[in-house]
Amino acid sequence: MCIEKGNKHFLCDALSDLKALQDTITDFNSKYYGQLLLKIVGSDTIPFILITNNGVHLKLIDKAKQFETEYFRIESIDKERCRGTVSLLRSFDFEGNDTNSIADVVRLERTSSEKTIELGFISAIQLLSPDLLQRKIIIEPKW
Image (tube, rainbow, N blue to C red):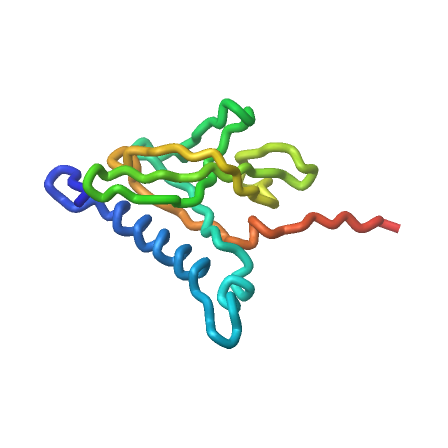
């Protein structure tokens, strides 16, 4: 159980629910329709942003691939220690350049990079559209 100042930390439960939802999307297999739920949703990832107690977006760096991101996918939750393991989602703008500006993000890409974070320093979670993970950018000629 996550404890913060005597109260159960809501973020552990919220991320645990999000992980369960992702697992349901991925693992649901119908006898007649196979993985229809995954096909309908279109992605096994529900991207999100974490907001720190200081009111800013949490940003993590992948030193190997050399990018910084504030977009994540939940991988696991340790409720006893109030920690979460997230994978880093790389964000791209319209031209395919790295960006963290939510106004400029048109596509998120899953990476194999994972980080463990202390949830006691996080005050909020903001979910994003899973469509960001499957967007294809098509530029049509003007003429």
